[in-house]
Length: 387
Image (cartoon, rainbow, N blue to C red; front, side, top):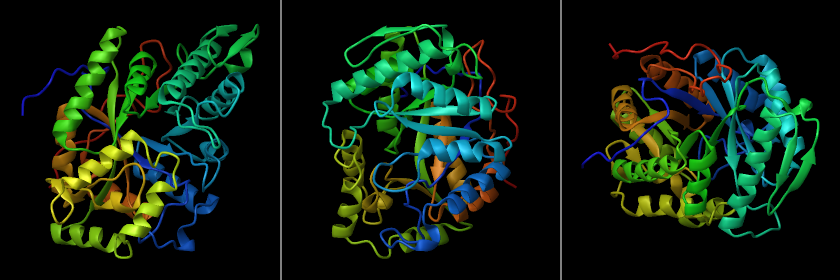
């Protein structure tokens, strides 16, 4: 397989931004499809996961958003922010659900609470009760982003588009702690309008797990689109992980996770999410269709988890050395940011933090020249081979 031409924002950095996942959406369990109230998405459980990730040295954590179940993302992030020490909060926002200047003020307030340790995950899904086309949803997101950036960088907002017509003379309340651009914008989407939006405005393109060849293709396409805007983006991968001391133990843990899943129940879980019928989810289904009888589509990439989960449907499964080797292959491709998760999230956070995290050179995702640095210094903090 030849390596395509890929350009990234931070070619000088040899490590990775390693992030975990805060289970805000009530999907945390020991067994998929068998909900246990011990893992209910509440302040106690979710903040425990986030605080553990902070202590263990993860550099970022995704705080997701869901309309169906779970907690409010922005409220949770604001409450937990003062309790953290070094971790960034990758806070999800749904474009269109809040008046953009008010959203800009909320983000700026959170950025000040975190003293710059804020990153933003841009979501462009339909709002409940609406059914906009893909082109319209991403155009709305484009307008939201442009309004946010005006408020963060200028003394006024003067915007007229298809969805918003806003003129504000005084934007002082929406200035972010991070200067000259505001928080980094992370984005995941596969349709042409979504790719174009990321290429024009966002900083990190998040992908769901697929074969390495398909990931190469996505990265090449995004690089070409970004170059058309005179820009470069970094690349990220949202993926689950199951790491154990032996490969047999890792595969047994994967099988145990799916012990109570049948096809009917799995489909119900996948389709209850707003994105259950999206193009991105269909690509996860296509990946599962290529897997072997054990659910592996390539070395260490297991697709079984997608049988009972909408969205990210693959996991790296193996020993610490196997997981590290797989991550290194992704890093060699040019992927700079990883958002890992596992079930139950606190247990897997600790296992990955013990077996893998100390051996990955890590940093907080770099920022554009002139922006306030995010988190601790950007040079790698740790690294080396397992002994």
